[in-house]
Image (cartoon, rainbow, N blue to C red; front, side, top):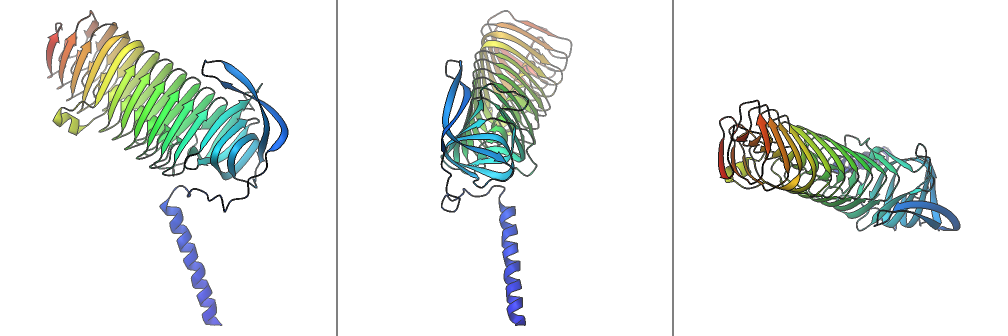
Amino acid sequence: MAQKVDYLIGIAVLALVVAAVAIIVTDQPEDPDPELDNVPPIIGEGNYIDYIYWDSQGHLVEATCDGYITMSGTRLIHTTMYTGWYVFDGLDTTQTLSVMGSVNIILKDNSNASEILITNGSSVHFYEVSHVDSRTQGVLNLTGDGRICGYNGANVSIYIHSGTIDASSVRNNTTGVSTIGAGVNGSATVEIDGGVVKAKSRSYGSAIGGGLNGSCSITINRGDVEVSSINSGSGIGSGRLGTSTITINGGNIVSNIYHGTGIGSADQGITHIEINAGDIRSIGRGAVAIGSGVDGTSTIDIHGGKVYAETSGIAAAIGCSSSMQQYKTGTIGTTIIIDGGEVTAVSNGSGSAIGSGFYSRAWVDIRDATIVAEGHDLGAAIGSGYMAYADVIIRDGDVNAFNDGQGAAIGSGKRGDVTMSISVEVDASTTGEGWAIGPGANGTCTMLVGEMRR
């Protein structure tokens, strides 16, 4: 009898150890098995609810859903949402919700959920109920793990048409995943057509976009978007070692980043950023505001909109962060083309306001736009960062550059190197050690078109 008891105790202990190891190994559960989940409930007919969304022409449209499942209360019988329509009406759950298929969610009364995880090949659309009281309706707060993203390795799609989604309370243990987007090694398509979206990321993932070693395509057409990131992640873009394509056609966007990338790719990532319209404000503390992180590459096209970018530390405000490999080989890490809009860029560190960061190389081509650039430390206002390279072409536009540090207004940063062609009159001035147009302190400048001046 004693031996049997010991045997049973041993089996129980072994089971506990195995369970503990499983929790440690991954931050996300595996994709749910539909065979093991509850049978999906039947969508009720004759249930009518009006919701709103923005169409492709920019018009606010009201539509009616006939037949949906209501999600409410604190304890749910069914936690997997299958293809169909769902209404979040006072939902307040700590359970993990899963998306399987094409799921449409209408946000009615104020709701709270821990996280929504999306299975491979699935999509989720968010809408808000018509005639909302914005204080209590059309709102989804993500608490706990605080994310809407794909399972690790999954390919998913997320569309936010209207409503308020607040995913700014992400926990510390969500390393490498996106808050709204893809999981580790996954891919995501994210489109924001309206509403209010708030998200925060930590440790190598993005607030909106891709996770660690993943990819994402992000389009923002309108709405109010506010993101923040801590520790080598991105606000809007890819996670570390990831790739991203970002298109901004409108909206009010605010990004506050500490050690990472505001809009673009995180460290060692690749990104293409296109800004056509919108009001964008991105602040990087020890981070690039718009562009690529450490050892990353980026292409930045600004065709319109109102853009404000500010940085401190080793990165450029608009451009790239540091890359010893790019510096040694002369490889262009970032290509910046500006042919429209109003652009203001400020550098308070060793990177430029528009151009390269510390130990890197950038290509800057200004074809048109209203541009104000300021340098306040070791980098140029437009050109290279400290001990970095840049190629600068200014063809047209209203360009105003100023530097009161050791970099040039238009040219090189301290101990930097720049090659320039300027074929239009520019307003450039300094009160520091660099030239107005030319080299920074102990730097060099090769002028192909135009003249250098103090």
